[in-house]
Every structure is written in C-alpha cells, then in structure tokens.
Length: 249
Length: 254
Image (cartoon, rainbow over all chains, first blue to last red; front, side, top):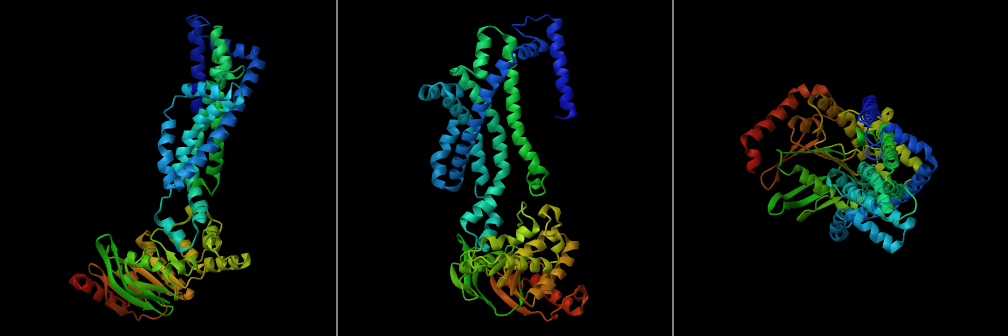
C-alpha cells in the first residue's frame, strides 16, 4: 500500500464514521465503523474460528482448482485434439453461475469440507486454465527454429522455452484465481454449513446483526487481499531478480 | 562440407528457389548476396533443415541437414539474437549442450563455453543477463552459442540487421576476426554489399524469380580484414562493380 492509497483509505474511514454518526443512521441499516470494529473485537473468537475455516477451504480450493486448471491448460496447449474437445467446456464453465453449482455439489458431496473445496476450485479453475493454455501455447517463430537447429527434443523445447515463457501468464491467472477461491468458499457456506464466513454472514443477516455482517465482509475482503498479496509477493520477488525482471518490467 | 545440388523451393505456388547449386569444401566464408525478398533466408533455412526443398539435395558433412542438426553440426545465427532472457550469458551458451542427445562431460562443456565466450570477448559478461547487454553484445552471445558446440558449418542470417549503423562496422570487423579464428565454413546472407565484400572469401549473387545463383565472385582482399580495407581502392572497386551490376538490372533478369 503506497502513501496515496493509505491516505484514501483513512479519508474513506473518517467519512464513513462522520456520516453515520452525523445522520444518526440506525446500526441495523448502516453501522458506523467503530461499532463494526467493537462487534468484531467482542466476538474475536467466533470471527477467528469462522475465518480459519473459510481460509482452509479457500486455500485447498485454490490448490485443487489451480492444479486442475494447469493440467487442462497444459493439455489444450499441447494437443490440438484436447484443445478442440475441452476449450468449449472450459469457456462454458465460466458462464455457469456459482450459485447454481454450489447446491449441486452440496447435494452430491454433502455439507462438509469437500463440497466447499470443490466450489472454490470450480471458481479458481477458469482463469488458471485459460492462462496456462495461452502461456504454454507454441508461439513458433525464431525460438522454435533455434531449438530445432540445436537438435532439441520436443520435451526439452517445452521445459526450456514454453514453460519459462508461460510464467507471467500463470501468475496473472493465479492472482485472479485465488481471490475467486475465497468467493467460492463463502458461497458454498451460504448453501449449507455450520461454520465459516458465509455461515456467519447468513446468521448475522437473519438476526439483523448488521455490524457483524459488515465484520464478516471485512474479513472476507482481507482474506482475498492476503491470497492476492501472496501471489503478488511471488511476482515482486521475480521482478526484483535479475533473471525474471524482463518478464514483469 | 556443404554441398547443395540443384535445390528448388516454393511457398505454395510461388517458386522461390530454382536449381541452386554450390559447394563449400574448406573453412571459407561465403556470402549469399541479393536484394530483399529474393530468397536468401529461404536458402539458408533449407541448408539448416528448417525448410525441406522440393527437389535437389543438401548435404552437410555427408549427412542430410535434419541429421546434421540433430548431431549439432550446424551453428545458426538468426536475424534477431534469439537469446533466452531468463538465462545468463553463460547459460545461453550452454543451451545446445543441454539439448544434445550425446552428453559431454561437464568439464569439457565448461571448457567449450569458456573458449567460445573468449572468442567473442565476453568472458567478463558471462554472469550477466541478456537485458543487461547492448545489441552488439547480445549478437556476440548468440554467435558464441552457435560456435560453442564446434559445428561443422556456421549459417548467419543477416547478423547485423538489428544493429545500428555505427555499431555495425565495428561488429563486422570483430565478426570477421572471430570467424577466421573459428575456422568454421560459414555461409551468411545479406543484402548489404559492403558487408558481403568485407566479410567473405566468395560471393554468391542470388537473383531472379525464382532465384538462381547468377554469378560467383572470388574476393581476394586477404585473410586479415581491418577497417583500413573499407577505404582501399580494391575493396571500393568490387563494391562499385556490384552496385553497377545491381543497378543495371542484370542481376534480376538472369
């Protein structure tokens, strides 16, 4: 966070606090920032518990979704037959609303961890699959000719040219995927669960505990930012290395 | 070492090369000179096995180009330097050894990489990355990579195309010294007459549509070429004659 964004954040918080207090907006409609923070502080144990559950589901979902996305992207990039068969389904999968797939997965796999992980993985899958497909695709050109002239095998060509060239694509896909994993886990918890941020949000909304609802939304945002930040950190480390700075210049 | 016998090539219906023949039997530098688009790079790609001629036969050291490439008998310098940005200079030069089906000992590989970098004067830059180098240095790394496996032939495709005019002259002189020392039979293509005359022992003039070899010139400027040659009457006379030939249209009518 740079100085300008920190300043904007502080100003937004002050405006929020002043407006809600000045107009005396009821806390069940739009609570002030301090009311939300007090609610979170007083119920820290519940918040931590629910956050840990959603974080676990999101993390596992991100790992599974990225692994499957990578495998499908790899297949589509390498085999024309796989590209022809899989690409329409991969694109189609992105158009299926997660609120439709979540109840279905809950029906098939129950209300435990597995269905949450699968919903998170489902949302993660598309960005990583399409970026892996784009990044690993054979670009031909002078590099292909170079590898041909030095007598390189297709495996050597893949690992020593296509994979390194795909790294910026994969990181771009991962940045989107990991944030979607959090959304997937929360939506899955909405459908059926007894813990997690989604469950907490539902409970808070049923009891008109709007400060707590806002609290869960904050935590959900922070979780997404942490996931996104972890990929940004990898990108930053690569950017600062002499070997990879060209890719992220 | 390179024998091209009546090579013809077409892109679809468009015939590019017609019965091009030549031989290179010793460590000489042969320039293929011709106007842009005549088919010089196509000829070079056929020699490297990147394109397959419709008719005719190419042999490199007695093998078909594809076999020669798999045995790393061909060194190829592209118009763009084609360096892998995520590999250091040394790692770029190491690439052909990693790709080779027959592995050498690591000591021998290190020695060859060192020798090759020494030849192009880049030993001190071996740990740098391509984006830290100038255009001329990048091209020298690519040349070191092409020379490191000790190829039987070296093919250069307009090696100075991406280099500015001021650097070009300096690099041209350096390249000649490197090629002389490497003693590798070399074919290079260019549309730049001065460059072709300065670097080569023999000139093949490519012209017509489809292209044929319209003339062959022996260049007798001596084995050592320095910048002094660029102002010698003999050099200027050859350049002038070639330019007159080009302007007269004699070149393309053949």
